[in-house]
Image (cartoon, rainbow, N blue to C red; front, side, top):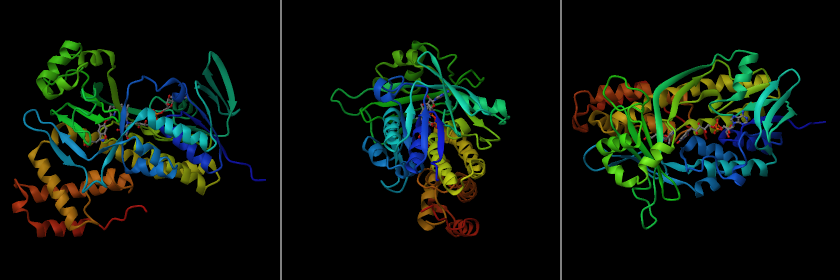
Length: 455
Ligand code: FAD
Ligand code: 8R5
């Protein structure tokens, strides 16, 4: 007899729905328990259209589940950063070399529905309005709450896809300490909306990720396919003595208008409901979650935000969670023993999660402060020139993270070497004219092995 392998997935968010699809497609018996209602029935929680940037890592995982076509049909292409300085005209900085190197703005609600449909089509059984509440690891029974009742279901193994505030993580930790630690950023965010223009079109350039860098705080905007933009203001939660604005002192609708009039004046006419949005939407907090262990023998494993929540500044949280799903499915394919398959997944993936967590923190500085800095722009120009001279060896940092699928830890290590080359070559220069190309070429050839991307 060859009984089907079985798993219970906690959470039908982005990672949970994709993980369910991948395992069900492999013939596993998959059950999924989700705290919220079915988004296909109730509409997506909150009702606001929140969008995410989808890049190659996430897209590749969607291809594995055959869900890429449906997702891309509703996506808006973003070719680069549109940087809005305090004074002067906005400028587009392309992310890649051409339109094959772009990112995609997708609606979280639509993406989640596409993946839930895919999971069901592949044979997974989804239970909505079922919040994991407790687990008896000895009896292998989990208890869920919903519909004013308690529901007990036996399980074979649990895959925790229940997000940054994971309930399963807490229950696993009570059984055996996971070494959990969260580093809060001290900055938060608030979402505002740019509605469509009077003629129904986009009010600003649709095919870009807009950034208003202001030193230690910033606004960004991503396009939605219904011709709106979601604007996100990122700044300190509390005063830090620098004189910069913070959410404590920018508390009322009038404070918000004054801040935008001073620092983001070109956005004011675009956000007609600024006061309403500012008062209605909560301040989100941002932090990085580190664990020493992601699994409890073969009983349970955590993936996605539940295992390694990160700050949003590289736009990789979902992309990394999707990559986790593929990596876990591969580890399970290669090993019939759950405990050792989970250990293999954890050992392979944890250095990469730590690397993208670090790069996400670094990208806040780049976005809020450097994107309009002349030295940074010169280094960016040099990155592209060195890529043209050494296409297999010198690949810009952003491209390694966003357009390739090499391990994040390798992208980080190579970026650090490249930064040294860029700094040395541009020191004392205001343009590429006086660059010592021979010295730069020698450094590239000596320090960077040719790179092969995953097939
Ligand atoms: P989630 O998508 O959060 O899913 C967790 C699911 O578990 C939810 O459905 C939840 O209801 C359910 N759940 C929770 N507790 C329980 C319980 N006790 N029982 C049952 N179910 C439970 N990433 C990017 O790559 N690009 C971006 O541009 C980007 N933008 C973002 C914008 C915003 C506003 C935010 C907040 C995040 C953004 N991210 C982005 C990060 C991305 O959203 C997350 O990394 C990603 O959603 C992680 O997927 P997940 O499945 O681990 O968690
Ligand atoms: N997440 C993103 C990038 C990198 C853009 C670049 C940055 C909002 C809460 Cl802050 C941010 C990026 O380097 O030019 N790609 O995708 C998404 C981002 O923030 C999302 C929308 C967000 C959490 C609020």
